[in-house]
Image 1 (tube, rainbow, N blue to C red):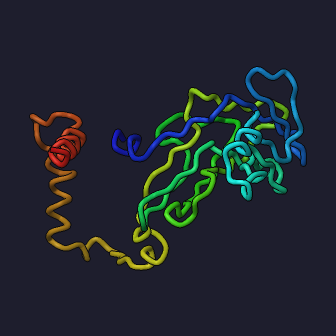
Image 2 (cartoon, helix red, strand yellow):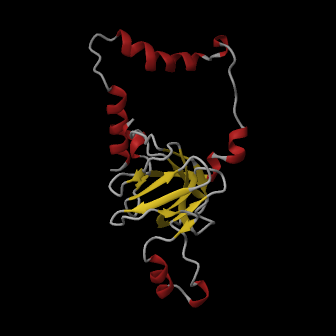
Image 3 (tube, rainbow, N blue to C red):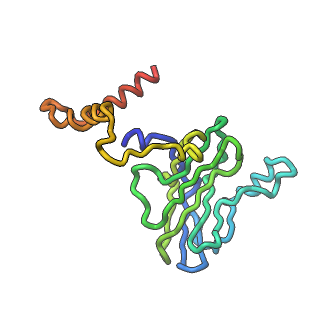
Length: 210
């Protein structure tokens, strides 16, 4: 559980903001320090477009990524994290809900893989609002995404190569020996200490970094 939670990086919203969906075609948004709700089609991060145009080359000005964009599909919003990511060759980023943290009851994250070694652009996610006529807040002090590095060899055609054992009698002696070590031995050892798997995992990680 600790390893899963620590695998990757948490991404926090660049500002505290809220979305509200009427259950139909209309979504509204507001942000911390603003009292007005704005209808959402596409929205820039406050004051970012002018900053982008001051910094970007002349032919790139006017192309600052939108902070929020409503999809044609009801209740679906694309959110830019404020980041642009680049990874090493053959490494991509899996974008998902933060692992082992309580999920918001107001929205669900779509998961996706961005090949950030080839595609240099905004690191965004899509969310589906699940609550209507009630503000759904994204707090800048609470992660709303987790990005995890995945090698290209681990997805795509790699998932087509696997074997299935359809019955217990097809397990090999080595499989049974590993089962004994994982399941049987810990349960018959009167001196067993809880959390031995976690301890061994941390020890391996520590040894690998020294």
